[in-house]
Length: 204
Image 1 (cartoon, rainbow, N blue to C red):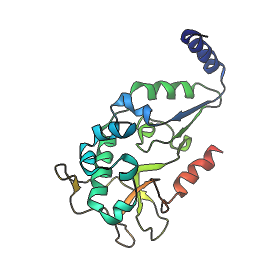
Image 2 (cartoon, helix red, strand yellow; image 1 turned 30 degrees about the vertical axis):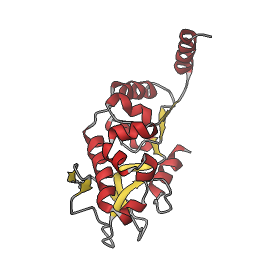
Image 3 (cartoon, rainbow, N blue to C red; image 1 turned 180 degrees about the horizontal axis):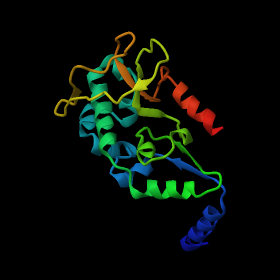
């Protein structure tokens, strides 16, 4: 079966489906201009300073930096937060939403992306599972408790030459320790997962 036949078969399956389940990873945002961090070279193209530091994505995306070097941690995540805020979803997001809304059973989104692009494209919050959390929410880095709160008020100034976030850094609103994005990172034993668990409950 060639590509054209496969496309026609997929079109027919989508046409006949009662429900649309959308699964999405980092590649979904590439057409919006977002980096996918594919391989260390892809990551280093997006963050040249990480090459100088000899850090791969999975090493920098580790909660230990909020303890050992919070200015570095917030330079990385603050830059990403700003990038995701200013990025507009590409047309594919809207086409999928329209298709999902046309189905008798509607749609559901299951994504490993933390960028909030589905919400920005108008998808129903109650129909999205962000399995790795969201950069648009914060938690305590300790954590002192299981609280999760919005990052809407967070604006990080970054010295891009040194790749350091400038004070004041986000702080836990309960204990005053450094706050961090509510994202499941590599080697992460302190991720507060109840927001994602609540999303999964709606999915089930």
